[in-house]
Length: 312
Length: 262
Image (cartoon, rainbow over all chains, first blue to last red; front, side, top):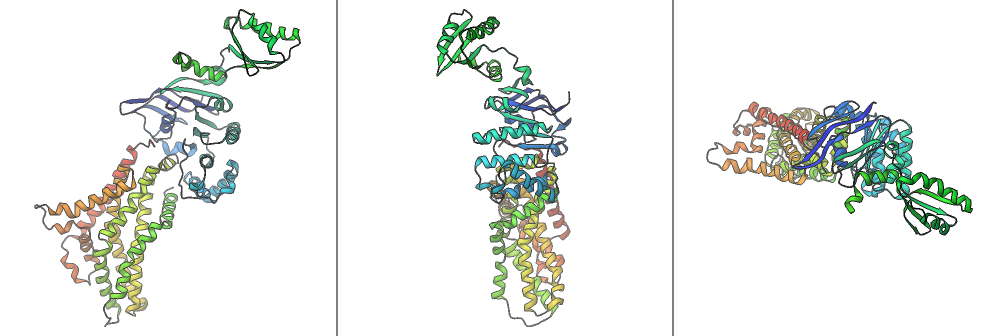
């Protein structure tokens, strides 16, 4: 498989502090790779090494098969980067800034102006074109930073916590844009600590905690773990609860704001799935909602990061 | 790519309020000359050239290249890279297909262009005013134009070396203010403290203004007063050129070694 980003034993020390420990990332071409981990896990440090802002203490980074930072100039012709905190020349207007970034990316003046106009509309800052960057809100700055990452139509996008400053609507809009960019065949490396966002955007995921890569692979492969806790809403929750309470394979059951939450012994999941729907049908009870209590990715995270054990 | 960076930087510097204030300050000697010049007795291109060389060298040594001029260069040059590092915008440049050497040289030349304008405009205004004063017309202008260019070249060479040192310190210290203070501290120590030590002969040679006098001597042949500045013009020019090249090389090395955590 062709890897756009590949790191080998990537390690970073700050003084004696080990921030990143033997990181072996493999980002295949054309995927949306979610780099997921809690705050302080080392996501931004890794991205800074990928973008040559920091030098690895040891280890290798290859982007498009070229060594970073030795081949930085060649690599960066095809990379768009959006930092966690938007960085921009605050005294420039949006038009000036994007045109300048476009020209630094190797575009001719006319091309840079054309791209700037299109991208301002695309990210929703068209009406603010002549506003100085310092006059923008943090969400608007984030949009400008996203436009600057896209300006040279790069093959690889590296986005560090891209939705951090966006409002809920902006986040939905942004996720939609990432999905449509992925459809165009771009490889997108996106760091986040928000599981639900990664689930919506990414088809590949790398889990990082305390500088170590815990797991990586296709989301669909990683999340093939059977769920044992479910949320259920029926047209008669009382009767459904009564039925479930009598079953020996039900470990725990309680009702909360009209939703039944049930925890099933994993050894008897088959029986649960056979008997419960049959009972509902026989009693004429309609099933309104049936879903795992936690998302598959959340469960993976809890399992891999030992969250349950730590809290015990 | 270097031209994009250069153009943007020059545009940013020329638009700044700082540039306008500095330019006004550097025009002060012209205003002084306007009110205090001696009565003109001989109206000819030759008389104009002698007078131009005397006046330019006096103002250059005593005002333009003195502490105020040096401070201006330090402020401009130490801000070029340090502000990028301090604000984190250097990371925007690093993720673009632009070489680090292009960043250093693009910034340096944009700073030098700005310095050339801050110093060159007053020299030119002075020249034009004197041409009018001596009623020598186009002939007078062409006669003094090479003197104007020579004075400007000397200024750029000497103050450019100071600017290159400021750029080097700005990469090491990463903050424009700290870099300016360090550069000024270095200049002050080198020019005024070190020469006080007993084993330095002719301590005045350590002064940048004095070296301006030495360098002007070769081009300003009509101004015999410059003979008092003892020193080898070629050696002085080579020294300043070496300082520029070495400082830029170390600035580049500093940029390669530096990490950008912020």
